Length: 560
Image (cartoon, rainbow, N blue to C red):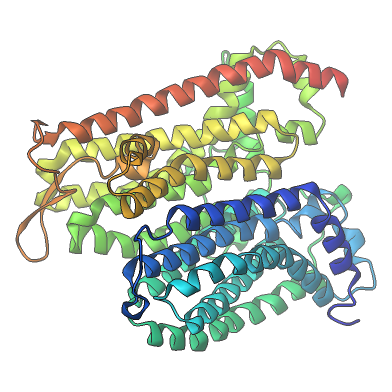
């Protein structure tokens, strides 16, 4: 059967491209890119195109980087669930029993997932064509940018499909895909920005390296994923398999989670061999001992290994070599929690709906507070412990480097930022789980909400400072960015000696501001706004979930 004469490809394209969601996504994508170009359009009354003005180059670079980041973050949401969705719908065995070759199945799933993204990227061509007459960027740079963009997206799509072939749940496949793709996204952005002043060299390297690297990664992953479908594991009756964690630990390669040893028992309590004590929350006990680990520990082990591997390099550079950049390591810890935290809470309520056990849960004598805290604390415990593993390098650096001893208040502020982020991600994921019926939808909406809450305000602030330095947008953008933990991590000054031996300050204070304990009051006000906004957000989510439990959950369960 031909590569494009493929019933899997035809079915996926008909189902995905004809939905109302696809048209809305295309419209929103175009509006977002058009708005960036409109508001960042050069304000000079006239431009000398012979001088390659910096404003136009910044505009085109901002357009391409924004296009690349948005498309890269959307790729796992399209591709990570194409195979796991079959497993969750219990149609995976039927698909394998068809006369289709496994390579045809993988190819159809991959091309169908990437076609939607390709349409989005191609639709941005008219917008970028409006920027070319301004000068500053040649046609060949635009061509190289699109070649590199499609090469990266195809590689990210193949990585996501391969993760879907390994895991049984879309949530696990999605989070591991993001953990693998994010370093590649940062590396590609660093490459493009570093060679910004050398356009010809950037074009040559992009055209020579990116397609070759994409093929070197995608082709082995394609045949490896197809081979897993050719010899699938025994899924058992009803598409489910009881996982023996002890046997899995014996066969695991690399990191092994042992539930009876420290620190594994912090997030993986040992099996219960006795009756529950009086006063024990049964929801919490059930979620911690069976629900989270009922599908094995592969996702947990991969999350720990990938994050620690990246943390070794970042710790050495940011905490020891270039110590003024230590807040960026805190940003890495926060970013890890944004990726991992929602996984353990986004399915807390939706899984009850999917198993049709929500009505049974609501008929018990458990109070709404017990159900809420049991599900929230179980997911929060796992995500916070995993995130705390990345804080150990920071604590070690504070103990070993004398420069950090006089900055103990700043270190405490960073730890508080990480703790509040852990609470917010779990709380928001549980809230979305109570709104939607499917775990995949809940997880994707949670990621989209976190991007809008934590990443868009700093991006808007940078946009306002770069293109509207004297506009009224400045104070609005400054206060909006207060909700982001990435901005809050940079609010406190860090007095250290950099690699030149000179006393430096990060971030630098602006002018002769008033200070309190050596901290600018303006930055303290910003940090206070972050604390207040985060507390109010979590309190609002808490009250909303209690209301949903008393009204919508019971009504929905009665109708079902």
